[in-house]
Length: 409
Image (cartoon, rainbow, N blue to C red; front, side, top):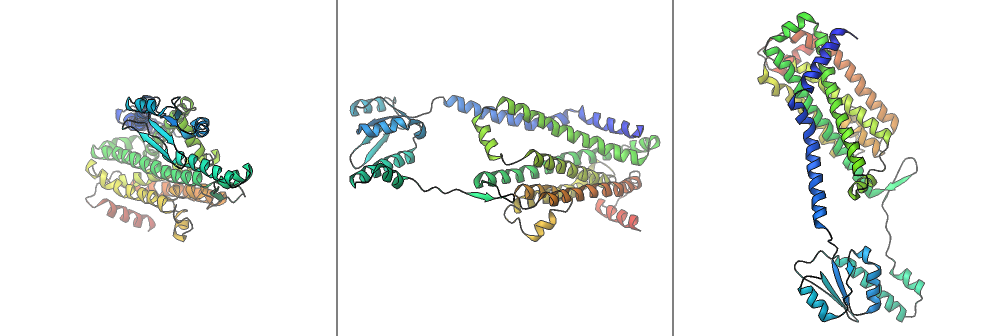
């Protein structure tokens, strides 16, 4: 590798890596996640024993059913069986509720500061008991009674192309989560690092340092060196999050909430995860190349926002379509856009994980984006070399269109 290119790459990487702004950028989401997680953990711990204590008064057989099903009902059945004593305890806030059982109905009394009692669960248990008693009076056997009160079981499954089935609710949640995650990650990284490379080029042009740099190295070395250096920062950024996530997983592996998340995303494989990361990285590289092209037309820092505005808009389009496609995955326009560079990274991975597309189609979309990256990088090198030392009063997009026409000619 050219020694000049290595120097520019290292210099670009180090200049930003050592800044307070870069680490604020990297660490702020982690700090936010830790704070939110700490608040949730603290609230959970402060709640302590929130299991409501209920005195069950009346039918002793029904009371035994409630004692047996304490965990399922989310309650603790009190040892109190006397109505007057139960009322005194409820007034003293030693009880959360009193369930009084009669032959035809039941009454649940609570106090204002009672912990939440799952009344629907109580109704379900009492209803099953009542039906069992009525079935017995009709002369039905225990098995017939059990069949009678057994709730109807409706399962939601999604048929997969490999003849396997997955839970529909979990699959929908996971797919929606992936669509949101890929869209957000790509859009946010593009906005951060596009602004970074545009600002760097603008600083060098406005301060006239670019003339000195190009006296020592070529425009191509500056062009590729800056992009690779910024891209390395983005990769480092992602690696830090992966490491932080792995550490968090080890620490919280026995956490109930984490177990639920793992269950929801259990259908997402390592192969797909690597594919999605590869697509995100190629997309980020594409946007960096496009930003470097447009930033070469900047005269000073005041034009940075003007330069990155179309980049941000383009990234947002893919993000928006990632939501739209979850409702209409077979739409013809959606299918076509899933192969279009700059947009496909927010769409094809989701289409793949939802089994709308197969692996060959997904790989083809990735290859198209990679080819587009190579072509755009070569094309952008010429625009960068031509404009990095030029200063025009024309609007940036007008300059870009003129440059494209000139290269074609």
